[in-house]
Amino acid sequence: MKSAIVVFPGTNRDRDMAVALEHASGKPPAMVWHADTELPKVDLIVVPGGFAYGDYLRAGAMAAHSPIMREVVKAAGGGTAILGVCNGFQVLTEAGLLPGALMPNAGLKFVCRDVGVRVENSQTLFTCRYETGATLRFPVAHHDGNYFAGDDVLDRLEAEGRIAFRYAPLDDEADGAVNGKENRRINPNGSARDIAGIFNETKTVLGLMPHPENAIEAALGGEDGKGLFQGIAEALG
Figure 1 (cartoon, rainbow, N blue to C red):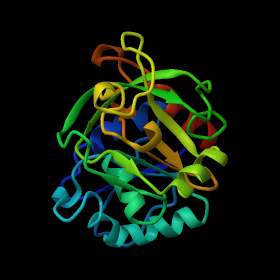
Figure 2: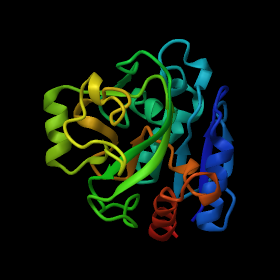
Figure 3: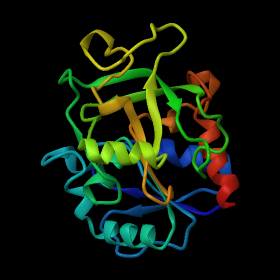
Figure 4: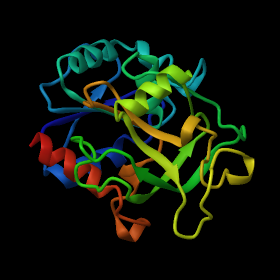
């Protein structure tokens, strides 16, 4: 599998993502600068986390208009797999590759900790190494992770199996409805229907707020993210 990572001014998870991709595929990804106008021929393009352009206008809004994003949109239209994590998820929504928007967290504070993430659809190239219903432990680190879309869009995502992940209780957390202040430990940002990640119509584009690339080493807190990258490498290898 050949991959490329798009790097913007303010990106800060590009190296973490590069490590995760190389571990899974055995090949280092190409690093593509935001001002470039060409992409290498690859099987996967990743828009990583960080604070592209400082998120000065709106999270992901300025990055979505970078020269390279025109090529990313074109590649997505041709069926190339696209993964956007955290700020990358924000960029993908702003670029029109995924529906909805990411708003400031319901608590209006930056959140940085581990959360539970339940796999909602394992029948995709991104999630094929997991079982539907499995709960994973991923870290989050964001201020604008509150996923919002109209009820018609949310209903369509549900009906078409396009919700990839939802926030869910970990073993040491109480179960139950997780929307609301009293359960913000489970849903860290107030995201509609506890959505942590979604697919496009063809399930070749995935955006998610938690960071699987920071959950690939047991010594650093857990390995639940390895399955995502191994599955991608196997599907596209």
